[in-house]
Length: 108
Image (cartoon, rainbow, N blue to C red; front, top):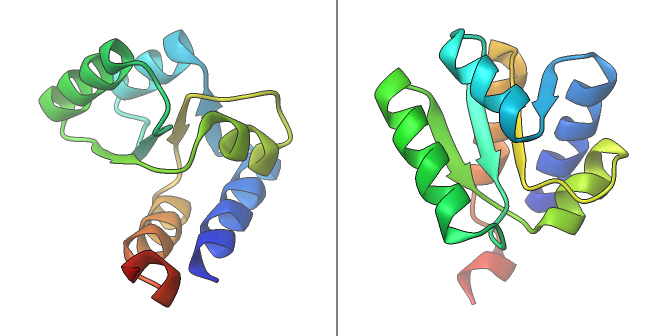
């Protein structure tokens, strides 16, 4: 399944030191131009989604809403995570590619 590939790639990026997690750290990465892709959990608060949508929009960073906080946290070996920034271009492209591909499960 493609979903597992994206989560697996997140885990690899974490081990490679190419992720930023947590509200303030992700905001700093976006402002500094280090964030290449920001992933927000589907079960994040509307306030959080809007804050990062606005910030990523103004800095030209791609934002995707995917998974839930538990799945994101488990993928990177941390407790529940609502927001993650990928700081490496290749990892960002790999993860975004897996997230944009639809599987048969997604279509139903």
